[in-house]
Amino acid sequence: MRARLLEATVECLVERGFAGTSTTLVSQRAGVSRGAQLHHFPTKDALVVAAVEHLSEVRRRELVAAAAALPTGEQRTRAVLGMLADHFTSPVFTAALELWVAARTDPGLLDAVAPLEQRVGRETHRLTVELLGADEHAPGVRELVQATLDLVRGLGLADTITDDARRRSRILDEWARVLDTALKERAP
Amino acid sequence: MRARLLEATVECLVERGFAGTSTTLVSQRAGVSRGAQLHHFPTKDALVVAAVEHLSEVRRRELVAAAAALPTGEQRTRAVLGMLADHFTSPVFTAALELWVAARTDPGLLDAVAPLEQRVGRETHRLTVELLGADEHAPGVRELVQATLDLVRGLGLADTITDDARRRSRILDEWARVLDTALKERAP
Image (cartoon, chains in turn yellow, blue):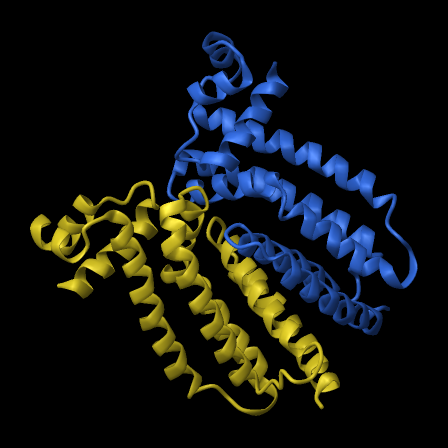
């Protein structure tokens, strides 16, 4: 029942945005009674933060699983970038974006969202370092991994109002080339 | 009076977000009568879109003026990136982000916001090409300029909930090095 509520919340955030999401709507969509919903999540904030946390964890496990199928050799960096871009254009990114923007002007929500964002950010960073086989002891490497994640975040934001898949693909092709060269040059 | 209304609207979007912005609040803040406000901008959507359009134009003129003071030589690329990052962490970016995210789930607003975003995006791209002295005829150069703008957009988004200035500065240092090398290699 908890999982059903959390998935209905993410769907609601994606379809109607933060302002259009209410606990009543979510209970209806999940087919869960108001009483049961209030028992699990007494407030809208508790519900939306738990939902994005839950989906981030599900998505992270999917990423780790997908990582096993990534090619090795010359195609690997581009494949890693493609996987990250898919992640940052998925419904869980859209739901997180809604939360993120709402939290900017809502101190109570920000208190709950900021630690979640930091934790998810750290985990995604660590996974990316591992997938790229990057050595962060070398100067500049950490910043290149961060830049890569900020780039896909920017691409994810652009995608929310225009379908951007072709442009995104060409940008990732080029960034894979540049990143590969830069990481090789910086290898200890 | 028009300019006062538009500036009050951007302030309101930055402080209270899209959901917390109303035409009544904006009229009060601008010290303009409701009648006069309704005469200039009959709806909230008309007001917020005009406000972001107006501020984008003001900011674009500021960028062009600031560009004249940019250094030439080795420090130029980093200075251009710093200028762009300042732009994407300014109140006009925050106000545009509010509009952008609200438009995602509001078809009427999207019809007004999408063309504005496209136009501003094209203008910023053109200005960046010019400032970097990049030649887009060379393969990959267009994509590197786009990647640079997606990067600063991602950095701007990250900045909205955590003060990120030091991290951002290190990332831009590294991006400037990589971009300079890549543009030189791709020059015809």
